[in-house]
Image (cartoon, rainbow, N blue to C red; front, side, top):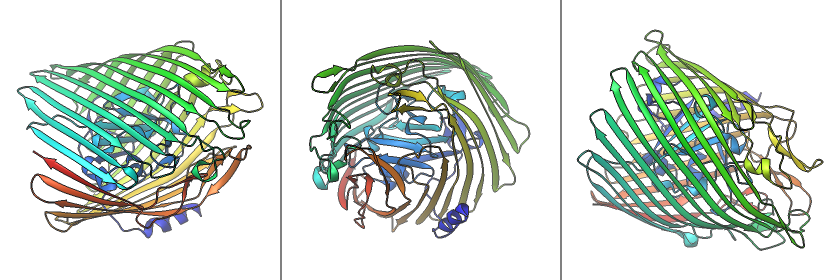
Length: 620
């Protein structure tokens, strides 16, 4: 009956084009770049143009239009965001930026990444791989991987100046220059952003610098990237009742700095052997103060200064013919260290300091090949040996079969694990040094149809999670839950465009049924969306994005006790227009939540109402 309801929802949508299936190169979920026909997992690739058509200013709003992704948000730009992929926990999705892992295990969300820390107009493309990917990435990739790739070098010199303003104090400005000098490609971007205060108490500001270099000479290729982000945020505390219900009107305040860098050297040794050595570094420093939740027996005032660093070094050898049979063989070593100097104010400041580090050594092998022209198979195995824990072995396998020239079938199964976060292990009040890794087994299968100007993708999945880490209020400590969580569902995308691309239409729908002993918060069972892009002529483009979201459970402590409520369903419509004034200047207009839908993202945290934005891009 549930699947009949989903089919009915899908059938009411207009078939359309949003994220078209292509044979472009994919670098996520694999040790060496492949085409979409050489990967057996469920994949979504979003280009810069497609992303900005979904939202001109918010990565959170854009990602909600992707099948099986739900981004839970608390209020406006200063509130926490969390990605739930196929109904999994927020900290079960690995987030990469230019190949560097961004998950921070010292935070209170178990390492979940805050999507609001990425500026949408810095993004060149996004690759999303669903299903457990620990056989490729090791820890953290239980539900899947989201890889954000920023601006890249170009063959010719290009410079772009971008400015935008919006209601409630929104403003941003950036300058980007890309090009090449002989064998050296470069990309540099500087940006300043103030998201304003569209919801009482919720504000965010940041400054960002990006640098990329790409040097090529004969059989050698060297890539370098560096990102610096400095920001501050305010919001009502999590589960405080937000701007609507919080009894205490003081705010959480966060000042943070993110830095990441990567250096890679690739050598094409001969026709059948390519070797790549890559090192990466990520550092996050944050100072967070919170007034707590009144009455203070719910959550007392607290704060923490945290400093987390991750260093990776990997060596991958690609051997064989990548049009027939090839293998990736290599090793990786990773060092993570985290320090937190915190307190709880219970009439006096009780220290909550902890300091942990761990080293993880890994070896892996990945085999890919064509059995015949129609059948492609791949398999991966990896061993991760983390300090103080037993080694973890992860395997993954998949097939892709071309039934005919229009129809492909794929199937994939994999294992995932996530090491306990530093906070879950080391917090002096609730930490448990005996925690085990969280485990996952994921399976999915699907069909991809493409003919003329239409494509249809349908996937069915089932995922099982065990030993999940949770807080036990009776024991007053973190524990591994013995009861498993089972998620199953279906997702679909439909794409269509006219021959001249004047009309591009799209629809998507996701259904996730979560079987758990304790209800999970913030995840809708059904999500449906549709998009339309209309190119009136060479100078004018119009777009519309529609989203329907099912009920979600939410928890709050604004009364002093834990309250669980069901948040209402809602509809949302976003509109946009782009006017190309000339070859150098374009003007962008957008209206977010055009119907001024009144709904809550979390208990007491209202969504931003109807908001207008205008931006200009000048290229020279």
